[in-house]
Structure formats: C-alpha cells, structure tokens
Length: 154
Image (cartoon, rainbow, N blue to C red; front, side, top):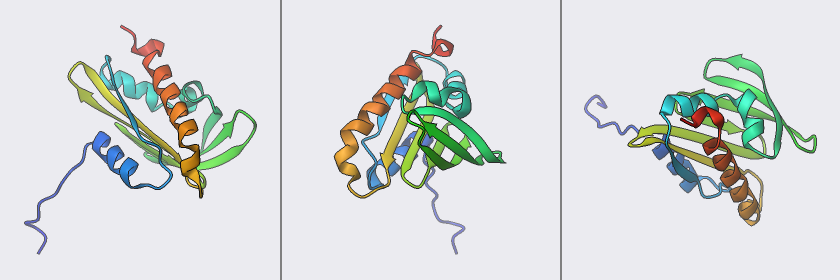
C-alpha cells in the first residue's frame, strides 16, 4: 500500500532547521557559509574529542565512553568540573548530541563558494527560554572559532 507514496528526504541543514523550529528549549539555530570544502569543514567539526573543547568555551573535555560507528556515548566535562553523559549520533554532515539537560546539533552541506554549516544548541530544562541569550552567544562563539580554524584556511 505504501510502495507508491512519495518520500521527502531532508538534507542535514534542513533537518537541523526542523529541530530548531520544533524542540522546546532550543535557541535559534545559526548558519554560516564557510569558504572551505565540506570534507575539510566536517573533518574539523566531527572530531568531537579533539576539537569540541576548542570550539565551545564551556567544554573542557569530550571523550567517547562506549559504542562505535555512528552511535556512541560520550562524557563531557565542563570548565567548572560539571559532567554530562551524551548520546551521540555522528554521520557525514550530521551530528546530534543530547544529555539529560543539554542538546547540541551540527550540520554541513556543500554550497556554492564552500560549505553551509549550521549549529543548534539548547537546554532541556524548564525555563530554558530565559537562558536563550547565553546559549546563543555560545553558539556564535563556536561558529566564529570554527571559521578561524587553521585547517579551514587556504
């Protein structure tokens, strides 16, 4: 019965936009056009253990604790010693990370002139809307640091 139904595929950026529009506590997603090929951008962004602590000022370390392939578990340690276990889905051009209280996502697609890259972050707690300005600043800082990364310079 469903063999003739149309299927709508969303690229990673569109999928991230849907999450941003529908998840409570998510701050407005951010998108930038980076003048580097998508494979170079994603190599930096997807290196969560090596690069996430450099990109996000609130993260001191991020280490995988179990799993392999595209589904893993990781432990994040914050600047003040706080710890959170994250479920991570990581595939080419797409990353979704969620803990009990925090949500983060990244997406990248090829675009004319380089790579369209997007992020989404938010808190999964009551009253998260009050903290949107702070989480928005963190997202902007992460994007700026990624854009300035030495691996993305010509």
